[in-house]
Length: 226
Image 1 (cartoon, rainbow, N blue to C red):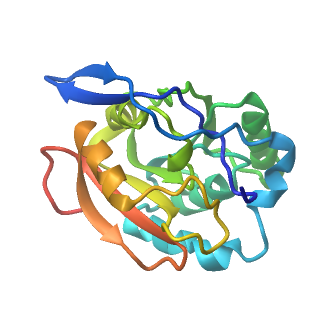
Image 2 (cartoon, one colour; image 1 turned 180 degrees about the vertical axis):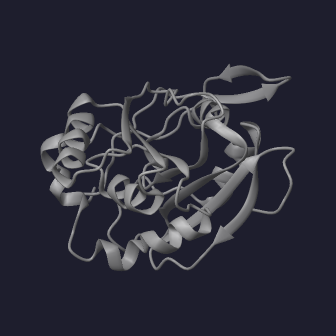
C-alpha cells in the first residue's frame, strides 16, 4: 500500500434504510488500518495542490464566503485550512477525525495559521457527530475505501446536512495509477449505490481531477439544482 491511507476504519456492515430506520446486514468489505499520525507529512506532497485542485472541488460544492462546511476524515487538516480560507470569518468549518492525534494536529495547525472559524470534532467510527442540519457542504476526500460501514456512516452524514446541503466524495479512480493506494479504490457506482441506501441522491459526477473522481450528493427529495 502506498502512503495515502487516511484514518477511517469501520466495522464491516451493509445497511438498508426503511422508513428512516437503519437495518444492518453483515457483509465482507475492505481491510484497512488507521493511518499513523506520525506519518501525516506523507499526505501533503508539494504537488498535491496541482492534482487535488481544491478550489475547483470547493466550487463544485458551491462553498462560498460564510458557508458552514465539514471536512470529514480531516487528518492533519490539509483541506481544512483551504476550506477555512474559502468560508472566511463568517463561515464555520467542522474538522472531524476518529483519532485524537489527528484532531490535535488540526488544532495546532489552525492555531498556527490564526484561523478562528474551525471547530474540531472527535468522531465515531460510524457517526461523524455533526450537529443536526448544520452544514451546507460536507467533504470526504480519499477515505471511502477505509469505511467499513459506509451506508450507516453516510446516513449519519446526511443528518448533518441542511435540506439543500451537498456531500462531496472525492476518491481515486480504479486502475492503480496516481498517488493513492492500489488496494482500497472504490468504483463510483459502489458509492452511488451506498449513498442511495443512505438517503442521498447523485447530483453530479465530476471528472476534472487527474487521478480522482468527485461525486456530489444531496439529501433525497430535494430539488435537483445546486
